[in-house]
Amino acid sequence: MSDKIEQNKVNEQNEKENENIQQTDEQNTMQQIEEGSIVKKKITSFKPGEVWLDVDGVPIQAHGGGILYKDGVYYWYGENRTGGGPRAVGISCYSSTDLYNWKHEGVVLTRVLDDPNHDLAVGKVLERPKVIYNEKTGKYVMWMHIDSPDYSYARAGVAVSDKPTGPFEYIGSYRPVGAMSRDMTVFKDDDGKAYLIFSSENNSTMYVALLTEDYLKPEGTYTRNFENRWREAPAIFKHDGKYYLITSGCTGWDPNEAEYAVADSPLGPWKVMGNPCKGENADKTFFSQSTYVLPVADKPGAYIFMADRWKKNNLGDSRYIWLPIFIENGNLSIFWMDEWDLSIFDKNTKK
Image (cartoon, rainbow, N blue to C red; front, side):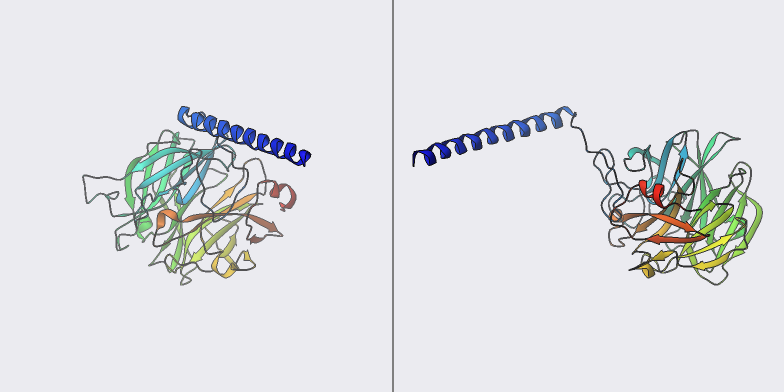
């Protein structure tokens, strides 16, 4: 009996010591938070579809976005949809050196509040920003979809900055080569030429237009592609001398089947290859829509498929779907993964 009593005393003493340690840890943590010295846990993998926080613990707002890589830093530009409404409140920029952890650099293109007729007026469409750098002018050039609330304006807007983190100065908008422009992207080739790729003719046809040397307007050369195929959300990349273009169908905010095509030039002609997504929910692009294909720096042949899982009733809570692209004999494959990291390219990248 005495042994049991002594053991109970020991257990009680251990519990008190554990409680004291826990209280001390909690007090230290609260003090660190108050002092701003708490060390945040670094992200080390991608978890498609989950809430993605920036380094300050705030959900990333970079929807319909694209990424610029410059001097060892990735810059992610996208629609800031804070508040969840139908219109972006501006264009955000985030920076990262590892693709997992992102610092918010601020809203680099803001709405115009004092002119209801301005392209950037509150209530007008501001979507799918993409930024490229022009070595000749030293300017960072942003292209985006500009539209009226009923989507009848159908134009491409352009802005410039001296720094990747902005602010960007809005120049104006065009109907490129006189054609309607809705979902769009911009692509800079190895030779320094840049191309605007956009859905046109009420989204029935995809145009590719060569830009001027300063990247600020269409040069005049263009092609019409995928006539009467109704494709949007273009995302283009170059691999092993070939150009690949991933698009979605036109079903509004609702997901549909992706499709990719291949060409020997950005201007085409393009050969349709089919759906790159494989497995369960491939016919819905894993409930997402393409926005960009990111070449991973210092990993030749490594590309990330970037897409948005739109929540049409709360667009600010739309999630990011990032997945690796596998290439074998020129054929693309995208598989769903609950979690993955960049080491997958070390094992599976194929030319």
